[in-house]
Image (cartoon, rainbow, N blue to C red; front, side, top):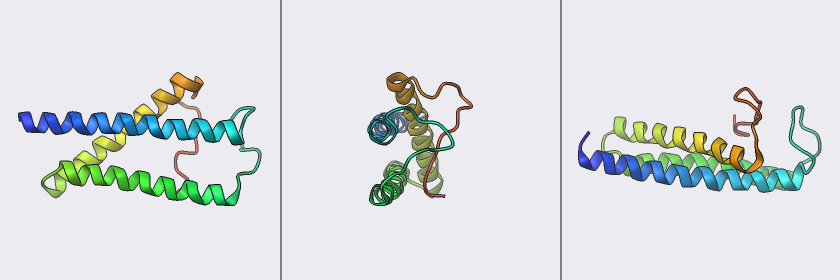
Length: 119
């Protein structure tokens, strides 16, 4: 790998880890507000429809941010897609790393989660 490619790789990685932290803190706040007694399936309780709409928009823009980092880092369409996938993977892994560190959740690798509200 060229020096420039390694530099881009590490910049995308750092961005994605930071984004994973940011996303996990949002989820921590939402769980504290809407599920103070714990979070399990089937979901119990009610989330305000306005907040749910904002959550869908937040998730949409999360994907927009990941696509944008791919567009900025890559030169060719293949590279842009590869950086998007790299960013998505690192973001997703660190999202769960931070949830585990702060909430001790998930309990195991097979614990259910909502993943995305956007199908």
